[in-house]
Length: 124
Image 1 (cartoon, rainbow, N blue to C red):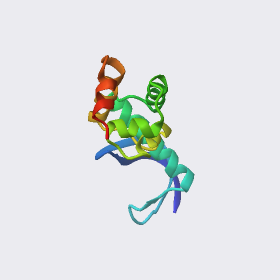
Image 2 (tube, rainbow, N blue to C red):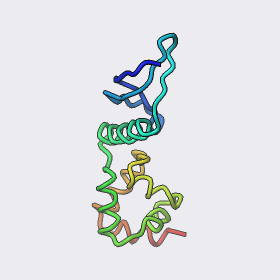
Image 3 (cartoon, helix red, strand yellow):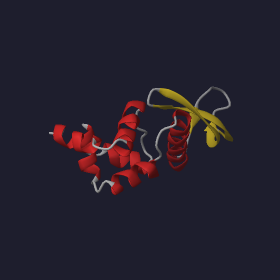
Image 4 (tube, one colour):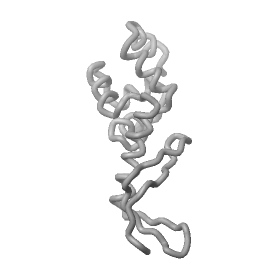
């Protein structure tokens, strides 16, 4: 295996995201690429940042700030949106990116008066 740096593609929410300057090991005889654990984690984080930027989605920090401004726990926001308990935590930690549809819903909660009250009335 040879040490390399270069572009790698990563799937994020069904979309392929290209990330530059990724350290990796490349087999000289075949197309196999191997990443060290820390490099793989950094690649995933950078791919999610790039995906959010490309789609114009709220960042991890913006989601956290919105939730805190609304006085909600991660679990409560997840329940209001009809999501699993850990989903909001992963969004805020940058380990997953929200879908475009959920980003629109988050922006409605942020920008449209009464939308949070409506979600609360509908939540189980």
